[in-house]
Every structure is written in structure tokens, then in C-alpha cells.
Length: 289
Image (cartoon, rainbow, N blue to C red; front, side):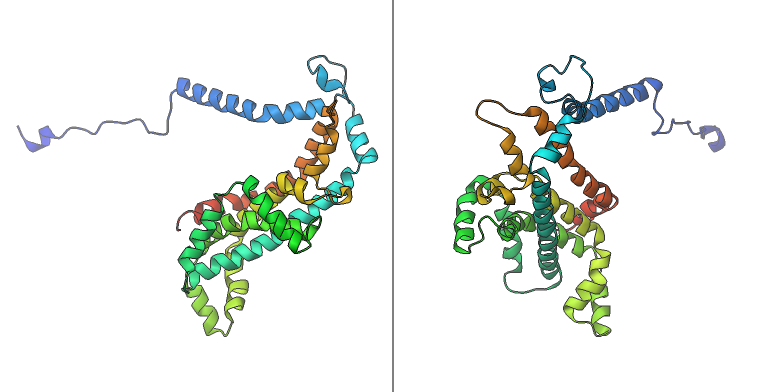
């Protein structure tokens, strides 16, 4: 038998990306079911908020929709004051936290100074402590500094929670930026901070977006610290103000659901602004440690 006769024609294999109709139907069904499970709680809260003050008691009985809960919250409570306080605290914690985390992450990524490795491990260990353990020592520290019941005290507290994670994230992201950029900045006469601010920060926008979003969400929805450190109602944040809707005899679930819908709007806006950077920042920050 000749060599030509022993050669067999190659088999035609079905491309791996092609699926059968049954597999595609099962996949789309599973995705649709997961989407329903994820979206249903949000839609149910919106629905209950439009049922009036007592509509939550019989959610399956159709009685029409109205916006009385929203008008009551916006016109007869201090919701707008709480909203403004939350915006001040969240933005302050985001700006200050990202600035501290970025400078710390850049310093550990680029500079070799005594204790730079223990510093990052200290950040990691700090993240292991639950918030309940930190309330008493932070309360005493803020009391000594006369920062209780103030925006500054709450901003510093939230930075102590978000900075360790953000520093780790940004350190990994700065590791992916070539060090030659820093050398080029020094050749052009830039100071170390000038190199960081003018050359490195623009390249690190995805990582900064991730850490900024994390810092904002941490401050926007936090309850434990705010309820303990803010004693006057004019300084309440939204998370603390919502507790006034719960009394000893009755909870105003209609008002709480309407307030919950309004609270999610700023968080959703921040997410949509930062979403195009989130995937790039998370993946790049996790490539090097």
C-alpha cells in the first residue's frame, strides 16, 4: 500500500462555539430565570412604594397606584436634609479616600522604603476586623478629637474602612503601568508628585473609577457608624434617617420603600458613570499583587 493511499482526509469537526438548539434554549432559560430572580426584589419594592401608606399589607390586591409615599417623604419629612448630608459625606469620603489610597498604592508600587511590605499587609489585616469591633475605639478617638456628630468625623471613619482595600487595588493597578513612564517624567524635570499626578493618574483612570465607586457605595449605604456617631437629626444621613420610620408600635413600610427607591438613584447614576472603567480596573488590579 502506497503512502498516498494511507493518508485519510481530515474529519470535519463541529466548531466548539456552535450549540444545539436544546442547549441554547436551556442556556437562555437559565439566564432569563436568573434575571427574574435578580430584578424581582427591586421591582417589588418599587411596586409597594406606589401602593400608598398601607398598600404593603395586601400587595397582591390591586387598588391602583399613587405617589403619596413620595410626596409625603419629600414634603413632610427631612429627607432632603438627610439626602444632602449623605451627598456631602459620600463625596468627601470618596475624594479623600481615593487620594490617600492612590498615593499609598503608588508609593508602595514604585518606591522601596523600609516597611513597604509590612504596610500592605497591615492594610490587609485591618480589613479583617468587623465594623462592630471598631465602633467603640473609633468613637473614643473621635470624641478626643471633638469630631463626633460632624461630617469630618464620619468622612474620616469611612476612609479608614475603604482606604485599605483601595490601596491594595491601586497598588496592583500601578504595577501594570510601565516604570519607564516615571523615568521619562524625571528626565523632563517633573517632581515625583508631578510625575504621579500628570503622567500616572491619567493612565490609572479605570483603577481610580473602581476605587471611587467602592468608596462612594461604602459611605452611601453605611448604617452602623452613622447611627452611633451622628446624634443630631440635622446631621443624619439617609441610612440613619430611615430609622425614624420604624416605631415601637408600627413600621411605615410604604415610606421606607419609597425612600429606598430614591436612595438607589444616586448609586445607580455613579455606577453608570463608572461602569465602562469597572471591568478594566478590576481585572488589571488583580493581575499583580
